[in-house]
Image 1 (cartoon, helix red, strand yellow):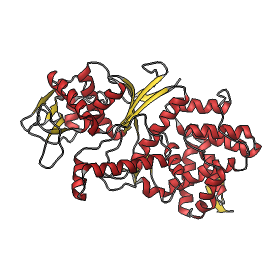
Image 2: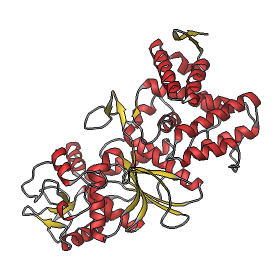
Image 3: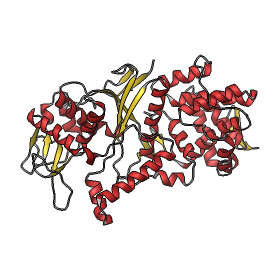
Length: 460
């Protein structure tokens, strides 16, 4: 049975959908005022992987990923550029879809834009006001009254007192409580606006996901996902809005992928340490980037560096090399009683453990290298396909990504880093990963020699 780590309960739980055979999933998408960076790419790839595995398990999946096409950053960027908001957002929506396509992330079932569902948001805000869970302030804004919702803080696991003490809350004299958050913003001169019972204005950020998820998936659905940074306050606020409006549970399973980090800091536009997907794809094939993302568990931090991407490239090369000379290997129906297919399934059913699933691919690749078995090669290709990997013609992939090219750029410093990674993997009992690092270096002409004084290396 599939188990999922539920952020709400802080443990792994057996996955039981609300409707047998069907799964409804909502993922918070991009705010479209700039190109996607690798943090966004991780969201795209991780939840594409989740949907692929749910479908492989036989579920009918309805997948919704929203687009935020109105907020303060968008308005500011459009003014700076001297262009309309629609022109700006349409341009970056198109760029986002190009990036998603390049990374092999299938389009969601629905991809609603916030500006198309403002009326739905107004209806939900009105419900909250009538239930005394929201109030209109003197400045024309409408705020959610956090103190009036008893369950606030259950996703973050903090009480209101903890949140007030630990969070930097912007002081706003119009709020009754510093933790209250805006549902409706009154119009400012020159900004786009919609008519509402509280005057002209536009919705706050949090309300859009509550309204759009309800529209497409209903008041109660299976899985809600997004980046770890959205756990608080965005997802906490969604729970308050939706459960406050409807008086019953909102989502059964909350999933959050880990940060992408650069020099131990979260990659983000606000910190200025981000790399756009387009920049990275100038130097690496899209499938290498997808493989780099999936070889780490989705909840773990993902450390970005050229060295890590080079390592991912070498590992993916090795898988393709095993398929290169096998004629007749193709995707086929998977026999799940096969020991490798069964191990792959066990890994994926354990909270989408892609590192272990990829380790199974390397075990199969070793068998293919030794036996030249078409059956094993077909299974390797088919299992890889579930992760969105190994679907290129091997010769074409390797022609665009020769192993020799990667080997040529491996510096002594990078070799030492890989040796350290191998040592850490062995200490943690991840022997398949350690063997893969050794083999990748060997493929690149680097021979490791283990001895009493540690591991040394030499070029072949």
